Length: 388
Ligand SMILES: NC(=O)c1ccc[n+]([C@@H]2O[C@H](COP(=O)([O-])OP(=O)(O)OC[C@H]3O[C@@H](n4cnc5c(N)ncnc54)[C@H](O)[C@@H]3O)[C@@H](O)[C@H]2O)c1
Image (tube, rainbow, N blue to C red; front, top):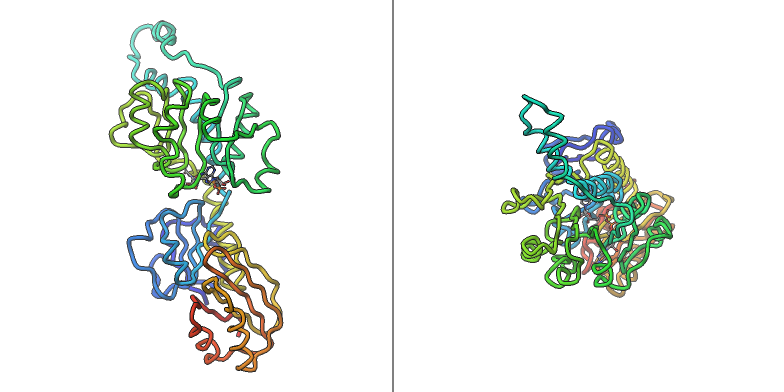
């Protein structure tokens, strides 16, 4: 039996993929084997030593102490792309909200005095909300991953010119991206060409403040800036300066900021990007399948800190080992196995940065003494035996 702790409400259809004869699932669990989480902040409380994996039903993992977990040899799984369509649709809505002054217009209608000639009031005031069309405008997309590619394609379908920038784009991403999306040689080129500018990059040391003072200097006056990635992507000072001097015409964001709440040029939504029933379900189905594959077979798919590692099962047991990625680890492992008289049927080893992960199928049961011997090798982060 595996014990799964849920830190947020996880879609029922996802949890139904955990068969009751193998899994118990609850909010409060002593010594859980794995944690299923959405946005709960896992930096705040210690993570039990029993935890073998964390599964995040979403894309971003800022709420999870990934570095600490890597040092413990614990994989963190996420659901890349599972909520991409939901975010894409809201970004399109965000562009339309800005282009057609929809939020202001809705506010005007909501506040109308219903008495008297409503038709006249509407017709007399509607010129205040005259907008522009998206067709023919240029959208700059920074980050062409799961969301960015979908946004770029959708904008092109709406008649926009689209220019993108992503120095690390995947081959899969390139296959999915419309051939009509132009490639910017640099961020400066993209900023200078864009009427609308949207960021779809993860928040990290390289992307924090990606829209900063320098970007502000190079954008077209009155640009519509969209941030459905993370608050820190747009530098606070540059944003306020740009709004004050009109360089930024509209800021459409999924991350409300206290001092901008009443600003008419700011359209802020309450972090709704992935908030659709479909996205939540997609995320849950995806991470639950990945978590099961790891707990039951040691396979790793879509982890943010472990290498992709998959191998069909053979032999009588499987040893799953995470270790520091340094020379002679495999040599030491095979020596310890040989000493214990355990034959390797097949093995697969992969590395990612400072971490390596091995699946070793063996022909005989693995005694506790062998597990202890493996764990005692300098550099071993975690060891687990399946199917003993
Ligand atoms: N608003 C929401 O509710 C919501 C929902 C989901 C995701 N997000 C945010 O959106 C981000 C993107 O999500 P995704 O699913 O598309 O992720 P992804 O990993 O599929 O794509 C991210 C892309 O950014 C690119 N990138 C990284 N650094 C870059 C840089 N410095 N310059 C240009 N490109 C760079 C990567 O190469 C990658 O292609 C997430 O990290 C998350 O923070 C927000």
